[in-house]
Amino acid sequence: MKKIISTTNAPAAIGPYSQAIEINNMIYTSGVIPINPEDSTVVTGDIKVQADRVLKSLSALLEAAGTSLDKVIKTTVFIKNMEDFAAMNEVYASYFTSNCPARSCVEVARLPKDVLIEIEAIAYR
Image (tube, rainbow, N blue to C red):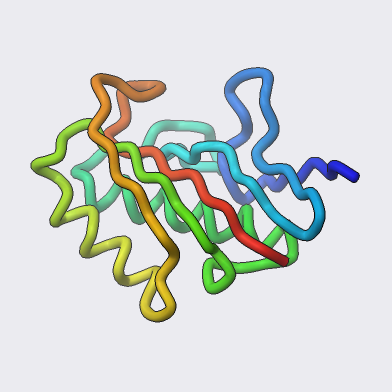
């Protein structure tokens, strides 16, 4: 059975979608962008600042689903500029320290609210 996952500790959906869905103990998150969940403002700063906010929000969303970053099996990272890959990777590595998930990283032309990064994840519970 499909279960909607929602938390105020991650950015609210900015369209007709759910923050995450659970089905058969698998959690599928929507893409998370660097929005401060307290006031819904875009976090300004470089890719490191924005990646940190995204991963904090992603962690909170997974926690609301009863799981954690340790149980993520796949992420997809969308970045606006592949020149930011190394800096993004530094921050990413501080959140995924062992048994890292599979990952894709794709440069895109534009992201919602003109942010620099968006990350989605699949985890198990």
